[in-house]
Structures are given as C-alpha cells and as structure tokens.
Image (cartoon, rainbow, N blue to C red; front, side, top):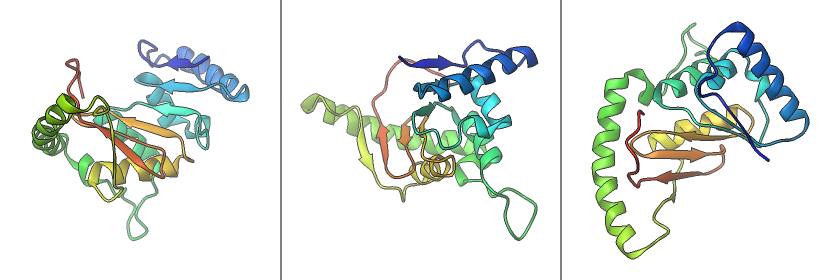
Length: 173
C-alpha cells in the first residue's frame, strides 16, 4: 500500500492538522508516501514530518521546490539570507532555462524513443544544475526521494539522479 496526499487538501488549519497526523501514522507503519501540492506546503512548515523518511516521495513543481529549499536549507553563514539555487532565483529564468533544455532534450528523447523503449529516464550526473540542487535538497531531508517536476523532470534521493525528458500530457510546472 502507498498513501498519496496533497492535491485538494487545502491549507485550512484543521485539514493540515489531520494531514499531519495521517503522515505521522503512515510513517509509524513504514508506509510509503507520495506528497504533492498542499501536503508539500505542510512539510515546509513541519520538516520533521518527513526528514529521514527514505520511503517518502515529494513531487514539487518549481515554486514548491523553492519553498522546500527555503524551509530546509541553512542560511548563508556570512549573512542572514538563504542561498538559493540559481534555478530558483527567478521563475522566469528557470522556465527559460528549462524550455531551452527541453527543446534539445525533447529532440534527443524523440530520437532515442524511436529506437529504445527505455528512453523514459536516464541517469544524469549530480554536477548539472537541476540534478545538483535536487540531490542537495533530498540529501538534506535525509535521503527521501524528490521528483522535481518541470519541462525535464529530475528525480533524486540525494545520492544519484535520473531525468525524464519525454514529453507527456500538458502540465503546469
């Protein structure tokens, strides 16, 4: 069994309190969790709900990733400001980077898909921008898995990363 929580949850304090208890109970039972939307917002407020839970998968879009980053990553030692990953400084810049990356990735994926049915995902190095930041956040949260949604999806548990370059259904990223 897997528990999926988030879409349609709302940010009503009573709903969030119940959702927090559900997450706690699921973790006590070592039940795998997939958290999205308002469940991610809850996690930003209460990182202890998910920290160190290797059977938790977070599925943030760009804005949700930024919120998680701000909640989890330490502030710069030389100032009281958070050090944001370049991909999160500006959503417009991120979207432009992802669009240009996706254009070449889509062409590559289309060529690969015509000859290889396993083109849905490939391992990428942690030195690339999206992978590096996704892996850093996953590691900071104790090795849970982050599936960062975007024009190119990045999946990391903090130790390695995969990307999915195939286009699919239209979605908000």
